[in-house]
Image (tube, rainbow, N blue to C red; front, top):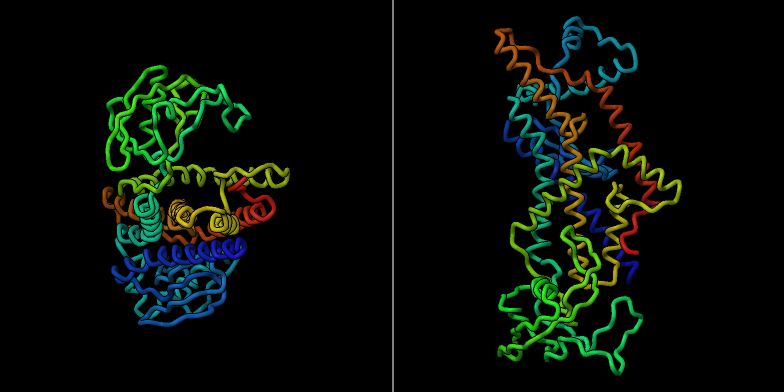
Length: 438
């Protein structure tokens, strides 16, 4: 059953990734078509095509390697002046060095998209703001999907929270750090037991303050050692007021930064039932935005973090649980979440968190201002717009559109770097995976 659950988790992650990629490309496709750009292909994956169907002018399909996706728009780059001159003179474009060959190949592919009505419906002809909208549409879809997933997790399922319903009451007070697990004759009764608090009681207020969570009740109790305070509980539909005197005890308490620390606080000896509590609808989006900030920090330091991952893999050191992962690592975590011995809602919530985080990573990563990523195309469009504004302000003739094919060698370098970093992470996720559960 555990193996089957692990496989189901991996399959869910793969399907979730496919949906995320598909929606990312839809984010490009819809505004491109709305702005009149001719879109020749909408493909999920890379490599050989395994299925496709043409609808109108666009071919929709799937390719063998589900590691990304793309749409093919007419005229991503303006036509090359040299290519136009060569065509007019009836001679093929001249090829020279390696980088020149790369640039020329990109131009040849680009020229093919400008055949027919592609020249009039080319991407590069659009106003700058429309090009930016098209390129930001993909990452925006991933962010929207992440916000929806986190909203479902926080507000639809809820967050596991200690409720005001009492689960158990200690018979006595045992010293912190003791190995004893049961009470002996002479051990002092716990303040909760002495006050008559029973399992199933629902705490209504503590020391005159109405409480909605066990954490609120605990905070008041911890601040009231050796003081007798009233605790109103609801039992069998009726409210009762009990008087409790917390004892001073050394316990682990939550610090302001979310960590735990040891402190002497008031203690009564009772625990609460844990249940999923629905959070306000804005908590999910807020969590998604907080996660986005953390991912930005990871992406910004990605080369250094990948290098550290490689070092940890070679030396056998433990992986940083907040470090970068490959698709293999994400799939492995998904399998572990699905196979863990926990209630189904816990596992569903964990899968939603993983898929939401994955979409946030796609959102941030695609905004990196380097070609061939969406952020790189945004920078090219903005640079083109800036040149036009400057020409207008200085009374000069409108410049030619920015020829981004000149950046193809840089694009190849970026792609090679991404492949190397991806391969390093895949190897690390196989040999030295992140340990989600110890």
